[in-house]
Length: 162
Image (cartoon, rainbow, N blue to C red; front, side, top):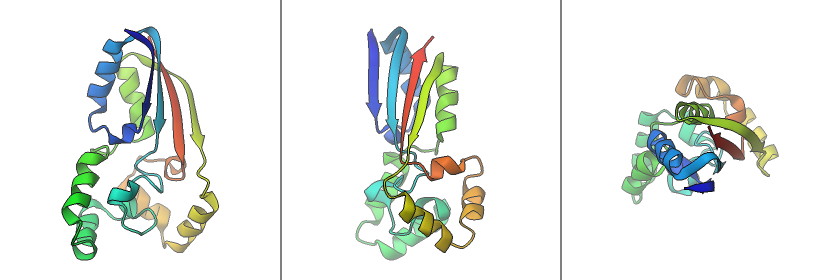
């Protein structure tokens, strides 16, 4: 058993329930887990492997639209991009709020959370203005994702095992 675990890139875990079960077994009582997390819903959330060159394209297109776009525009990388989109990134998609719910289910409590604004914040604000009905589209595709998660850079989350 250990006192502290640091995890980076949990957006690549597909089974957060399993992750928290293992963390619970590995940490001592009152042990701390520190997450550095880039939300799937953020501007860079699709990472370079699933990014399509459209600002927030991975969330303003629904899954069928994303697949069609990939097939049409990325024929040489289609299989790799689709594979990464579904198996290389958290799927089914989970928000930071979902992460906290998984944590509490496994007897962890939130000690600290901060959102690091991205250094490209001004640029992304301009993109939002250029995309007609941006927030309406995001809400339709992901109704429970808050705006701060869409606009986030990196999350820093500290949880303590009860």
